[in-house]
Image: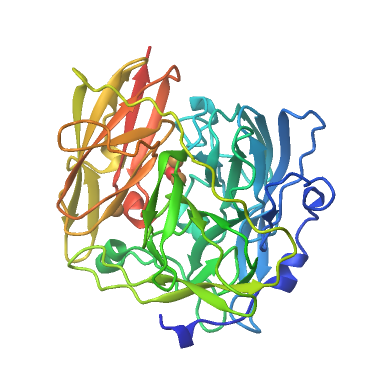
Length: 471
Ligand code: C2O
Ligand code: CU
Ligand code: CU
């Protein structure tokens, strides 16, 4: 998709019809200066400072994506993306969920180290929530960071129809003036010229390529503008909620300071020119003040190759960053940011091979783990309190984002030591015909956990497995 093909229509008016967000007005007085930038903040129904209680309904919604046309979607609470859930580390999050759809569904809270019964996997951790039925999710939020929620039932179709939202878990001990903060939910949607939602294709080439939607969205809008104050550092907290699309971010050759990834902050920041987010990954980026009022810069998704057999993606404009006159004092110099992350000790740890495989026929394609599709998989076993090294081997000529439910892992280097700077990951890109090693420690949360490729077409084609963590 080139620039000229991107509809410039924005969903402002439609989003304004979403639920009220009282937390954004008077209550939000802390120094973090987070802007909503089109996201609706979920209302906390509980007065206690350490409990965030949300009522969330999945509902059919009609929104305007193609100018002048209506697209039938399914959303959380009528907004695209669903409401931004904001809490702080250590809070309990209660989500009173109601399924207003005609199909069963569940909610999976991607990346959160929660009890297995709250993981939202149908027929494994709970029964699917039937149309009209409710389910109460409740768990504590042990780690600061940006997470997200989405269905785990018919995920490719349900997420592709608009069911996804972000969860921001703030760190009360973090320095307050890291930058003016915005959460960016990147996604896309597949629509025809009349605005009808296009269903995923089962054609082998389409399954392999994955469902890249033809309209790219940032917080539910096409190429929105974010006003940034001159002299103020920016903090962009970004989640890739797309089904299959990779985002390689570029900003006119400037570099970003990456301070965090999936499970919160990095051990120390790193400078990066083109951060890449595979599906489901998150980054936490700082940008030095962008210049004088009246100037603007384009945040774009650069062309990216996911494997020799797949075409290079096109460049897509994401956000215009428009510099406006300062209303607040210029940002103070950035404090030294460090985080203590204990390096995972994998000495003597069991090595478990997880080969990502494909069996490609002319009329259909089957994907699997170690040659076995998810529907026929036997679980991998691990003991509570143990550490394993997952040896993830990509046997295919295209990339896969590997995701493990419930636990963070640390990517290991060739010598088997955790890569510096240390980080807590739950999703990681595995380049074509490459092997990566991940150290994972199973804390005290037994149960059956999933792992899978987060290109949802691939997961649906069988690239998923189970991990049984036992006492
Ligand atoms: Cu985003 Cu199985 O998860
Ligand atoms: Cu997950
Ligand atoms: Cu894949």
